[in-house]
Amino acid sequence: MYNKAGGCVREGVAAAADPGVSAGSAEGPAIEASGLVGRYGSTVALDGLDVHAERGEVLGLLGHNGAGKTTLVRILGCLLLPHAGEARVLGRDIRDPAARREIRRRIGVLPQDPGLYDRLTAAENLFSHGLLYGLSGPTLARRVDGLLELVGLQGVRRSQVGTFSGGMKKRLAIARALVNDPELVFLDEPTTNLDPEAAHAVHGHIVALAAQGGRTVVLCTHNLNEAERLCRRVVILRQGREVASGSPQELERRFRGARRAEITVRSLDEAALKAVRSAPGVAGVEVAGPKCLRLELAGEGGLPAAVAALVAAGAEVTRAVDVQPTLEDVYLRLASGGDAGPDGEPWPGGGPGSGWGGSAGRGGGGRR
Ligand SMILES: Nc1ncnc2c1ncn2[C@@H]1O[C@H](COP(=O)(O)OP(=O)(O)O)[C@@H](O)[C@H]1O
Ligand SMILES: [Mg+2]
Image 1 (cartoon, protein in one colour):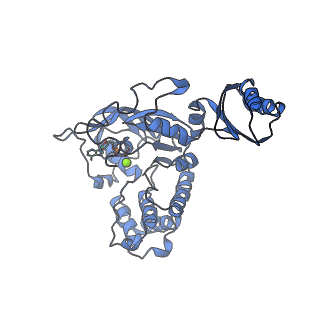
Image 2: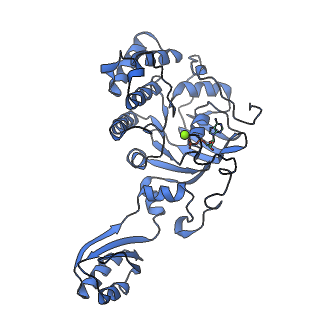
Image 3: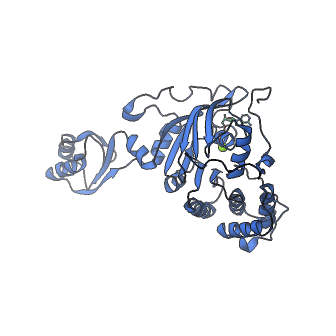
């Protein structure tokens, strides 16, 4: 089922409307995939990826442009067939044609470019999408009302979508992705290109939809605050492979590297510097300014020991802080092909420039 160039074959979305297909098993995780490979011609977009999402969790897919996030959504959303690998979505095999129709019926997708009908009103966009899923009459009317309410667009339900701001369009597109009351929702960069206020509103809607009983959400994003705030677990992708996964807190702990601290003193002299350098638990000291020291700590007690040593040497300490790594630090290191893994080990597969990304001339900065 691949085209001549070796690319994945796209299937019609309209096939989603197939009310005759059974609801299937509700058992098992929302997503269970192993060894997924997806190529566009000679470009390898997914390179043997394993992904797992429990029911009811919000899973974040983090990675720079070209990392493979959208391709993964297209494969798990049954719009493309993988070149290799296995996946079950909502307990159903993505290679089985009947299961693919069923999966499409039971999931919702907010594509990166939502492609709404500009000449239709907000409500008409939702109605027309609902009809594709075989919904009609009062059921569809109630669904549309509820969704417009959820995303705060009831007041403009009769306005043409062409007059909407980017943020309003994204909110409407989120509502559209929910029209079939899906068990699993893919949101592909829901806040990219939105101003902070609009992004904040969209975050609120994502929190609301994730809170609705048992729904699983897969969120593709570059936005670290978004991932930290919304996701129970994140997978960091680079060049179609996972480079790390876990809860944001776990990743921060695991990839924290050396612990660091910063101390500011009223004035710094040789005696104070000598004292802090020999304090227990202090592995390194860098003079970062006339009053500022950056420390590398070897253990938990390093910072209090450093402060005590400075005070004993007559220095007046005005500020002392533990510098905690954030998910952003971890992400920037891993997603860009940072040179060290946990405990300073080199990454398997090499650093920046290794692998297929650059060879096809598209790599990271290519299309999204
Ligand atoms: N339709 C396409 N045709 C050719 N190459 C594509 C197409 N879609 C994606 N790619 C390439 O596949 C790789 C992964 O892209 P994508 O899945 O869109 O990543 P992301 O969503 O993380 O930005 C990139 O190198 C990209 O240029
Ligand atoms: Mg993308």
